[in-house]
Image (cartoon, rainbow, N blue to C red; front, side, top):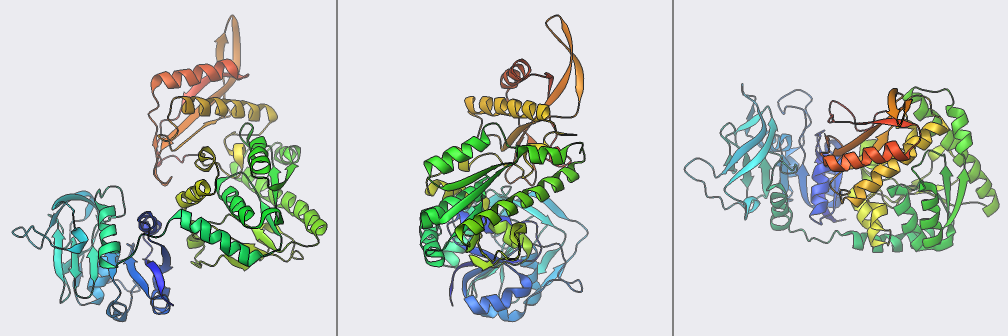
Length: 521
């Protein structure tokens, strides 16, 4: 069965998912597969092209990931990146060495095979400036290319920054085209996808949504589906997508644990209950969760209590619904592609057997429905817009599962939750009013377990300190503190101190990740 798209072969590199996202951004479908399963998958599916990722190993080490020479003789275009480039050279008879010097960071890339030949007719470098900046991160390099290959670019410290065998459609780059630090990287990937592999840019979220709705109709038919709706992006998009396919045969359970942001629970009911006319059962479990959390200060213990209690509440409510409905056939989950890749399965099927997922009783026999399991987070957001969910909802801030519990340091009380809820609402409103929503990747308030002395009017106060956390980032793996204008920070500070009871001091977190994490707990 021919596979319309690209296989991204994972050698353990830190950028494997980023490579796949870049391919998808070029509107070409791709899947990630482990190198150990690569040959079988290629024989089975005959992809339009293959991309090898980087990896931490050295090709000449014992036990290093490798592939058989057969893979390079199948007529399928291959692009090797970093370790993938070295592996291609090593397997095909070239020489890879470990020099005394390493190459990290931004480096000037020169096209051509030597200093006297800077013109390059390579399809890979079509419409790319001869002298460009690329991002290097390697300790080994290709000293001698295999027979039939030519060097297409180099740097001062790397004699083979890229090589190619045009007739066999084999290409390799030592640098990382997938990272933003290589400005021409996306153009190079597009050249490989379109000019070398002949891919068509048909992977769009409009096509995905339309196709997936029809697929769900066929799979589910007139059977019933249950969904745990959290109000987060993944579960919300999954629920609306399935609802558009099967209507009232979908029922959602919304467990309100009382740890949501201001008015968030009501917003879930308003948007998905009234606007989308979905069947939603709201379970008000605030007091139940707060009683379980009483006296608990350790963040990991709080997380475990909330996770366990959520499962118990959902189990109880789903059991009631299961009996009322005379059985439910499918459990809907908002699983997305990074979950699939990180679990090591790599399977792309939309449906599989349910094995006590979410803590459901074993006597509730349901199959698992995961319509978003092929998508990255940014693609899920685009699907949400395609199916009519408001932009401000699908592009909302990342929010942890334990909610405000991990933004309220120390023991959780209703007083503390009220402070953090109101202060966070003020921060979000001011960010929106000043047009900073898309400039700041994530922003929220946090309540350290700290009180300090202050003066309000003629009175001494001893009240809480509120911290503001705002960061810029691409994917959350690393981040920097956001440079919010001073006048905006001043307005936020003044409003919180004057409008939120029990607060007399505001601090702004100016640490990056690393060394800090984005969340405080």
